[in-house]
Image (cartoon, rainbow, N blue to C red; front, side, top):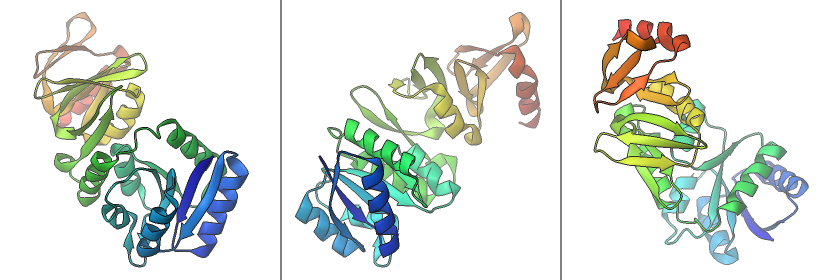
Amino acid sequence: MLKVVIIDDELNAREVIANTLLASCKNVEIVGSADSVKSGIIAIELHNPDIVLLDVQMPDGTGFDLLSKIDEINFKVIFITAHQEFAMQAFKFSALDYILKPVDGEELSSAIKKAEETLEQKNISLHMNALHNNMQSHTKELKKLILKSSDHIHAVSVKDIIRCESEGNYTRFILVDGRKLLATKILKEYDEMLQQYNFFRTHQSHLINIDYFETYKKADGGTIIMRDKSSIPLASRKKDAFLKLLSTL
């Protein structure tokens, strides 16, 4: 059984989360609950949970404040938030799990299952540092993206990504410093996250950072040359949108 602690400042919210959790997840045990940063720390130290369902905003601080006061985070965290789109984007970039209020049973069950599958990867300090960075600024220069490979976790600045290319169920990131990182998500997910930061999907297998665009060759259907001298195909259905984008640069 997975030991779960629920931390939320609203009694009604804690009850709804607990009832939803017990109804949708058969392998969990709610071992404790709390309504503040202070009582949350006590509950975690007392019960040593596997998973903490953590509210973002509480009267005496935030869920992030709570985590910063714990010496060793040896549990998985699922944030519970009613935040606006920007905050949700920050969670996605930081590769941290979250669910929105009001809590949906299927979403909660999915988050618990995902947490269970990755319990051995409990250290989230890198994720938390990235989240703090992402919550502080709306600018792409300061935006951090967490990339998980099979054996490493990397924090990468969006401005340092030249391009991405699909490799089956994985995505290869090519960075300005010459590194090539293979992340364990499909290209479509990164396309959705990065398109508002001047990235363009040129082809089903390629996503480029327009800041590193160098040349467009019209021959042979269209080829894009990037600053790293890579040649990226331009799908015919993407040509008009790409040329329109170039006209705005």
